[in-house]
Length: 346
Image (cartoon, rainbow, N blue to C red):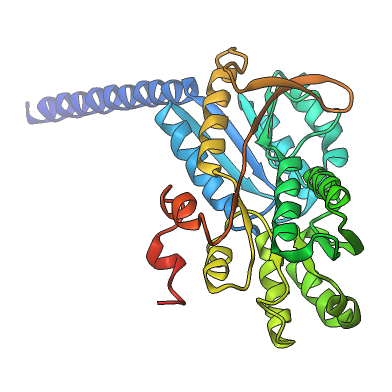
């Protein structure tokens, strides 16, 4: 009798365990299905060398998650082959949208086409993907950035004088747009660019080396245009060793914290503030809409030619920042804290 009860007990345990496993498997399948139903967005960044990219990433990811999407962020560390591999990986994963901060537009063209052939929407973020027929190009007006830089140097006493241009990566198509805006104002203001170089990979040490190696040229100019605030920082450090920091106006862009500190200290004349929170949030909203089959729409949406195709375009307006309006624009917007900006002058 005891043996019969023991056998019956084992059968019950087996049935209960089996039922439990089935229940767990069904639950897992449901969880996977729920997860798979969420919108999948991928981001491939050039690198995080430039300070602002981390802010772009954080705002985009938080906005997208609030709107019900998962975001996979990858960093190519300035390696275009790695960026191609990342996009190929996103294609295999079957994501809904890929947001690309490209290293080299030309090199990515065929890989971007593979993604489009797979039905994946493409957003060119901040930098254009030329002749790639992206589903959206969203950025700031980069030609206006160059215009603001040149006007700032003119107002700092460089009108009719000589300038040096220390530009960013030649692979970054925005560099050409900034250059155009800058040179147009130089022509109207009678300013002559006596020398210019590109800093491959946006490496700031290249800009600093120029200052050390071209002392005669530097001593003759009335201002220096730097492609961004990171370059400007290294240039100003080199100028300080020659006792020229603050005497020779230097301009940059991105409103990095250290650049804002230099402005209140008097060693950097101006930076261009690009409200990346607005850009990243708008891009995330568009990505969610595109994943749902909704084309970018709104008063800020227009059309631009990418070299071959007419594509949707959003170009946000940057703001020139000097010592006079820094408190209002930078601190007033919460972009940087006052105690951080004025850390070195209090």
